[in-house]
Length: 199
Image 1: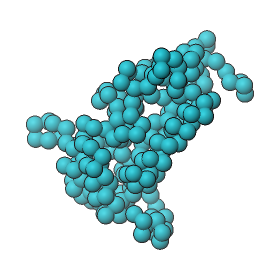
Image 2: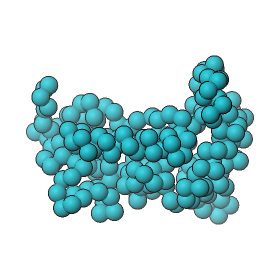
Image 3: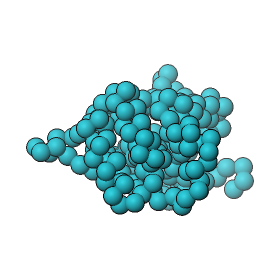
Image 4: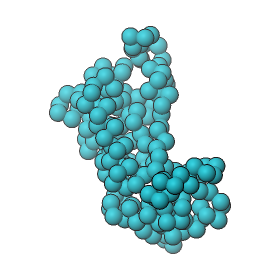
């Protein structure tokens, strides 16, 4: 990865990105979920055979509800443990890099899981989310919305990106649900949202 980055070879060819949700991409003989290490060789072979040079890995951050496909995150600094631990994910990413395949993480900075295992009402108050549900909830997804006015929240999310880049050697990020961050009325009816100072 470092040699490719220093030499800039990753930028000398068009990006062909293969998006993959690991828990559903390939299963074991009895339908069981395969781990990061078990998937590594097959994923590299598949991506190379189809002539892709990047993968976008969905659902890397820990999330309690498998049916959310990783879009209701509870652990912004932890990998999805159903597939293995940190060293197992590092193994997968190393194998992709050895095959000259770049790795993009599907990152979810707009909203987060509202379950008790997350940080909804972290200290008994709206700590990470907006207090007013017209700002702090994304009802159609059943999630809480990050309070981007708070420096601590912005720092938390930026820190998570740096964490994934430094610890796991993620090469890039695809940020999910950007429209819901820009348009405050995203998925909401009149009276269910509050305009900001810009309208």
